[in-house]
Structures are given as C-alpha cells and as structure tokens.
Image (cartoon, rainbow, N blue to C red; front, side):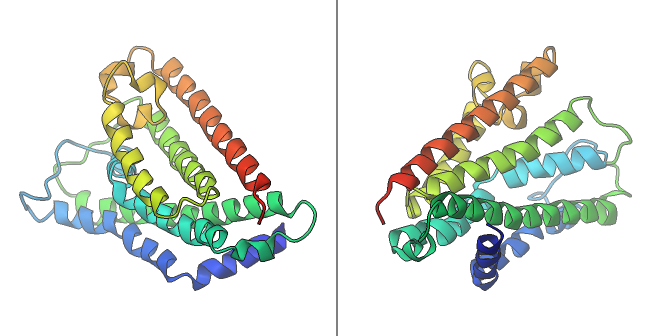
Length: 248
C-alpha cells in the first residue's frame, strides 16, 4: 500500500493541473485585499472575528462556489477516470488483492493533495484577515455560538464530498464528473436553503438558514454527521464493488 501511495504521489507531482490549486488557494488573500479597496463590486458586510471570517470565507468561496469542486473533480479525473478508461490501470492491478489497495491508495493520495490545498486556503484567509481587515470597522471580538460547530462540520463536509467524487471517478465518468460536480454544488446550495429539505441533505449546516436550526442545533448537527457518514460509506461501497467487478 505504501509503495502504491508513493507511486501516486509521484504522478501527482508530475501533474501540472495540481499546481493550479495553489493559485486557487491564494484567492481568499486577494479577496481580503479587495474588501479594503472600497469597490462596490467587492464589498464586505457585517462584523467578524477570526473564526467567523475564516468560516464565512470557507463556506462561501470554497464550498459555495462551484469553481473549487470543478477543479477538484478535474484532478480526480486525471488520476482515476482517465487511467481506467485508457486501460492504463490494468498495469497497476496485477496481483491478488491489488484492486482494493489501488482503490484506497488513489483515494488517500488525493485526500493528501486536497488537505494541502485546504491548509493553504486557511493560511491565506488568516493572512488576509490579519493584514487587511484587523484595523477596519468590520472586526469584532466574539462570534455566534454555532460558528465552531459549523466550521468543524464544513471541514468534514469538504472531505466527504471529495471522497464521493473520488468514488464516482472509479466508474470512469470523465467529463461527466466535472459537470456533475458543478450541478451537485449548485443544487446543494439551492436545496439546503429550503427549510423542509435541509435536514435530509448533506451540507445542511453549511448552506441552511440559521433560523432553521437555532432552537435544536445539537440534534440537527448530529443528524447531519450521521447522514454524511452514511452517504459517504454507501458511495465508497458501491463504487468499489463496481470497480472490483470490472474485467480489465
């Protein structure tokens, strides 16, 4: 398994598409600067401490726009779907039990890459806050009680969606995954704002209106974790079963 992960990491280092993620990670820093220019196009409303600012940027920019998930799906396609559809993967699955090792080595490697991008996003968001916003009128010293819970859930949701995309890539979807990732993001953003649907959709705490859950926040958040884990588990199981049954 370790050797497979090393091989996948080597391929990622050669993949120029991966380096575009560094450019995307810089966007929160640039946006923080644009907030201070007084431009009508880039206006910031409300008051924030560091946690609420990082959480707001992460939920709105990374999870709320389709750009990042489309990029992630393009990287996933280049690592998984393209190899499956071109039959290159056949040279990697020789040997007993190799399919399951290959499946999880690719998954782990991609999550490692996306963890680096996530770390950079948080780093540049914090730098933007400290460099450009700390001396403005948009700063406050406290955050809403639900901010820590929503922030932690948002990180789990980030990884959950990436695992789902990676699992789907083993079906050999290619560009269908890229288009699907954009549609998924758009639908999640819209549907989770509908109060009666939000409790039954992953991403509820990220996109739902605060008024929906402020009276039963604990139970709402717990049910969302269960829903997320079950959804991710089902996608992993059925995608691996499909990949395992393929005759390469």
